[in-house]
Length: 192
Image (tube, rainbow, N blue to C red; front, side, top):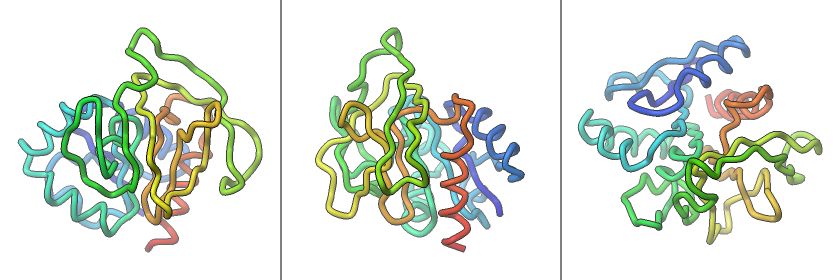
């Protein structure tokens, strides 16, 4: 299995480490040809408007938009914003792969970052709360009918699943848990 990580900006190395711990080699995605033969892709946390700029500069915007329609994709924080059908605060273009509205920086600025236990839904593989690291995290609003909530924080959805698409407003790669990455790898295996 070949898993790509969008590597133009943001938290790439922690995802490479998690995948390596699970026996999977991650591949840097910096140009359109890097999307070839991938089983799935992770869009990491970072800064979504910067990622938009760099995606266009690298001629990756259109190829990535096609990729996320066909293959498993997991967006984390800024990556989740890129996947949302609608982005506000402020508005910006997106890949429109997940039927939600993402509100940028809804959990506060960098100095207001926090770590909190997130609660799983019945859709998740077990009932244990997990650690979530929130850094300038987006809020998910106006969920479409096909969107399933996997984790919540104080009754607000913070990890979503729709078809082949996952989105997390928190950073699972910055915790000791591998279960989030295992879940994504399972999606990729089922899709192959």
